[in-house]
Length: 245
Image 1 (cartoon, one colour):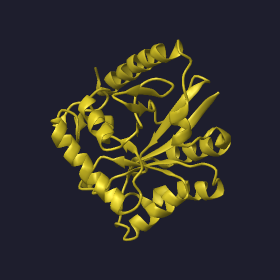
Image 2 (image 1 turned 45 degrees about the vertical axis):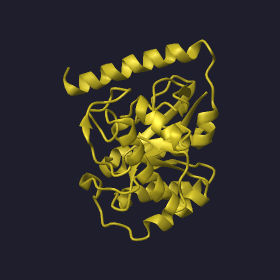
Image 3 (image 1 turned 90 degrees about the vertical axis):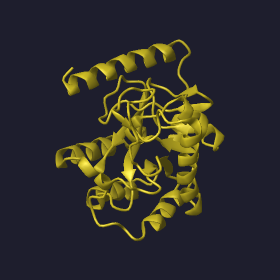
Image 4 (image 1 turned 135 degrees about the vertical axis):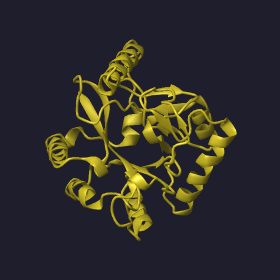
């Protein structure tokens, strides 16, 4: 049976709070469902500031942490340094991939220090634009991170000592088995998409799992490599079509 992790990117003080609120209301009604939130420790990307900044943002983050939600470090400043999609090849820009290991480690450590200071750090990372490389994973491992919410396939797998929990689609496409992470950007969601996502979550609440459960799932031995190869090829082809070849 397919199971789903609900992931929100770009969670920061100036996010679209009015569009996020219906999801917060859903989690109040379904306290057993615990989402994955990508927290930008020190947002300097003006594109993410779409609403007045919440002065109580870190108080809210601590409340989410206390409720058992997974708070992933979503980059450090969400500023892009280099072009390129990193290991996954699905993005066109990166905050980390392509930079020297020491530079990546220093940037990641600055974001980690903020989350630790605010009392909400957890050993999970979410790369801006899904872009990271082997040195990003090595730096993360050295800083005590254990998992990344990204990768190809239908089940988690290990790379550079880090567990990758695949994230393929932003809609609930699935094959009837496996672990799927729904990647949601509330800043840009249409009304129709928001409503459709909430309907799916309501009708499938029993199949929504938290990130910790997802990262512990393991694929049948013969299925894992094939699933990663197929999902990688399919997603890359889809991205090419969307870019016009």
